[in-house]
Image (tube, rainbow, N blue to C red):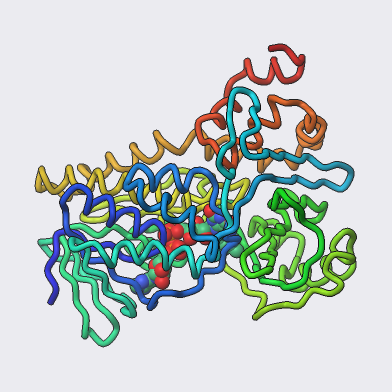
Length: 415
Ligand SMILES: Cc1cc2nc3c(=O)[nH]c(=O)nc-3n(C[C@H](O)[C@H](O)[C@H](O)COP(=O)(O)OP(=O)(O)OC[C@H]3O[C@@H](n4cnc5c(N)ncnc54)[C@H](O)[C@@H]3O)c2cc1C
């Protein structure tokens, strides 16, 4: 039996952020993952500005080295929101000054999760305070006086931990069984993703494209340029609407790429690499209880994905870091009670709820055509464009969307 104060269940971006932050505080942990890295994770592979922002707070070396890894990442200098009748394009050339912001660095990256997660896992492999156990699937959780015993199905691995940081993603058994997190189709996303070769279009900016097609709204079809001349393509939609509209995402994606413009032309010589694969997105559009006696849920296990953009890597890292900071307090106080750990919930929602709420509001605005038309019509408005960009790059700017003054300035074009 392995004895540890803290076990991190899952070595995705959330689990890595948590274990690395613990190590920076001088605290050891056991990290267990069912996969042997490198492994794929079905994802759009887009890393917004939030991801380097959080990892920089843990260790500046991580992204300093990542930015020089041309083999595993693609720089992104622009975003395109495409509606049936108009396009909002946000492009920033390096060094161009816009609204007092100088964009010396790309607004984001595309990195295949097989590469990105492996890059992060290499960091925890080098860290003496982290004991990584790969290729071990945890299937049972038994509570005792000390905390939890996590076991593999044949019980060949058993880990006794005072505190479990649960980072095992969207299908977390722990979150469902112990955390009582229920799947709610209004707050859950369905998606498919595929890699293609030989897709035409694209230019200097390496824009990520979000296509808001009528039958998919408030979801979208994405086309993201990727490494090795490949393109990551997928659809993200709320599960209740998928059922209501009886959409089979895989068939729908194949149909759109084959029949609808501009895809028809751009994909006419494209070759599908591998399969079109589906996966779920637990959305952060409602608050949940995300801790309890001897555990804290992070990332997808805590349902923290942005309901508008489908972005979850940044929030997985944010929650991993906060869980580690609070775990340090719990260790100091030798208190792993639900009451003590509930402060983690407060810390998470103090940090993330405002932006999750804005995204949920915008996601729901599809029902009110007047609002989405207003938003679409603002494509040339500099303030609006800077805020749209902020949704993907700068976290604090997004808070502007909550201010009535912002809408006043926006609508009446006042400075
Ligand atoms: C199709 C799709 C597209 C997306 N696109 C984007 C995007 O472009 N940008 C973005 O920011 N987010 C995107 N997301 C969301 C993003 O993928 C997740 O929010 C993110 O991966 C969450 O990180 P995590 O660390 O919480 O969990 P994960 O990354 O899912 O990691 C969980 C880890 O736990 C391990 N694990 C699971 N079960 C067990 C077990 N029983 N025992 C041991 N180990 C276990 C897994 O092997 C895995 O390594 C997308 C999601 C989907 C489905």
